View (cartoon, one colour):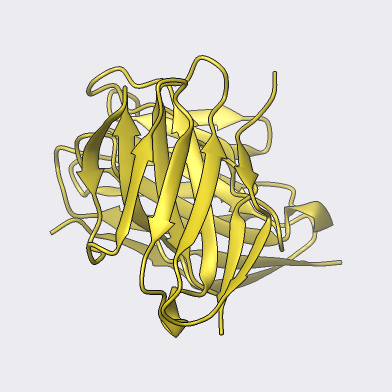
Length: 111
Length: 115
């Protein structure tokens, strides 16, 4: 079936350290993997995405890696800051542009 | 560029009533997606419309329905409301090119409370 598993569900990191969130997906045909950040009471905001023809993508302090063979992808945030505190969702498409989301990771940056 | 807009921001209904939620996509976007986000939970896919047609449907009962208008705006209708329908309903839009995996941009959501 169409499934995206996300770990961990909660993550606390000292300010300045790195945070890593991992997702696995079930359909080898998936070709698009976005990551969204949702702050309390706000809409999900796309922070980075990757397509299946690329293994890694970076945007300043944020990077995403994709392992198609193992069917998993990860979000890496370096030099974390208090404003990085939010819930992060991974997602994968399962054909027809339908996105299936992971269950979310609540990231807390400890000052 | 204006983002995705949704109305109303909040909606309070009682069990058995009907709710209508509205979404306007980013100008130029032809696809609209609806998601349900129950409190503290993830996003569950409801419906996808493109060019006025329903393209895909999530695992929700038929009392969840919708439509897309010629100007690409969309309505989500929920009939015979149940308490567990209380959630944040998010709309997203994209410019769909088949198989490309297009970025979906979210609106602020409509918070529906069923009493």
